[in-house]
Image 1: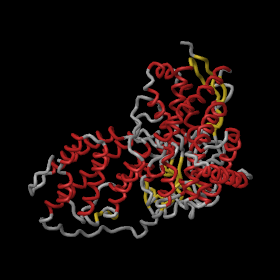
Image 2 (image 1 turned 90 degrees about the horizontal axis):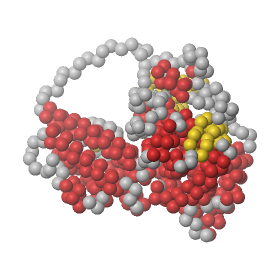
Image 3 (image 1 turned 135 degrees about the vertical axis):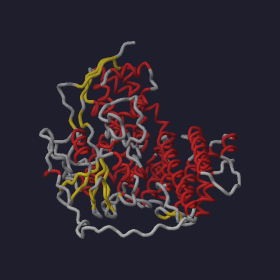
Image 4 (image 1 turned 60 degrees about the horizontal axis):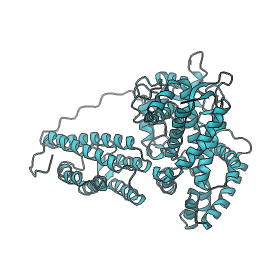
Amino acid sequence: MVQTGEEHIALSDVDDSFDLRLALELGAVQLTMGRLSGAQLADFRQLADATAAFVTGKRFTDVARYVQANHAFHLFLIEASGNTPLITLYKQLAVQDYIGRALREDIEIVGDIVQQHRDLVSAFEYGDINAAREVIARHAIHSKATMSRALGNKSASSAPAPAPQPEPARCPFSAMAELPPYSHEMNWPQELQPFKVVDDGSQGDPYEHYRWMRENAPVLRCQSATSDVWFLSRYDDVWQAIRNPKLFSSEVVSPPPLTFLTLFDAPGHTRLRKVAQPSFMPLAIEPFAAEIERRAEALIDALIAKGGGDVVEDFAIPLSIATISAMIDVPDEDEEKMKFWSDETFSYFGRLARNAPGTGTDEQSAMAFFAYLKEAMERLYLSNSQSIGGHIARMWKEGLLSEKEAKELCAFVFIAGHDTTTILVANAFRMFAEQPHLVSRIRQNEADAERFVEEVARYRGTVQRVSRMTTEETTVAGVTLPKGAVVRLLLSSANRDSRKFADGDTFNIDRDTSGHLGFGNGIHKCLGQPLAKLETLITTRLIARKVADIALDPAHPVEYVRGNNLTNSGPAHLYVQLSRFKS
């Protein structure tokens, strides 16, 4: 497991060495997560990107330089730990030597190891320790597999090449695959209407549709007014697509009509995300925790005092709007119109980018929202505000963003900062109402609150679906998607797939939720995730401390967001009955 200098490399030694690197890097993650400065994260990102210069597709273009760049990337996290014994042991590993001696340009790489470097940095930018561990473990598996190929090819290089075999005869029309039937042409169960591109109210709580689709039509073709839309519902298919932005592009509309991060691929996405992301990192939002808790406690006390109510209108929305308004630094008295404008702007986004029906007033409202935000940023720039709004304003005034980009990015941040939170918080109330025994469990063991929040995100995700467009013809689950196909990745369906999560349609806070897609994944992982989780965690703990009994109100069935909103189908209204816990 340490460098020996011997010529022969045994595969068992390589595996042992890579396993030890894995163990040391997992330790470094534990020591460094949430502690890297903005400058360190920028350096880490630069080192990850540097390895890409020496890889094209599944081949190395310059092994020697790749080995150097790869070593610098892996060493960064180890040295950032500041743990001298760990650093010393890591530097004794033979990994770099093995890689340099075994790899060649003709070796096919297993997995997208460069993307994994970038994913690890993203996990640190989000403060997501589980994602970091998962990336490192997967990276180790793929690295060992690539080395195994290299060593196997090296030992076999002297063997005579096998004689070429004649290609079997093929039907000349085999490539002309017949398109599958449309959703409305399929034999759906009697209790389910055919799945539609835009919900008309028939699929507000879509999980029964998802369950049927996963088993009967994992690649579902739907008809829309402008083009076919394909829905992927199984975990592995969704995971592969969301992690492959080169094949499944986010630029469904080109050029993107609005400066919303979900509409951009790299490098535009990278440039814009670097502006917005620092303000949503755990260290940046921590100063708001006390005020979030104060507001949440006042709201839940009011709910308890009247025996319950609509947790969307009476709790989740006012909490999330107040929080993101404070982070952007807009006056309290403007919160109500900001909420209206943001909803209208989301509808405007859906109409421009997703062919959704509009409200009739969405463009006018969006323009008013952008004008308001421009005026607010002018004020924040002059006052040197340290808020998100002030930060974006400085990027604009310093020429790093255009005026259009600054206004629209600020609007996107507002929407991302409250929409995700509203859905997650409301669904936390719902899960407590459906499984009230969890209230007392978390009251007795507050550490379970974090497990509860992660399972809510998996079971009733904040982002139901994301849109992509294929850049080349590709096959998914045996179905050929043409180049330029509009594809919707059903994240919330993937999260219920029992192939990934055992008994996936059951809510269970004791399960391992690693890899869930409740906040998306890859380069477009939800910007507002840390804020949504913080607000929901605070809410969860308050419910456990203050609520004795909680149940859904039978007089008010759950109403779902529908129609214009193509991304989320969370509750529009969710009434609960609750009473105060008396210790």
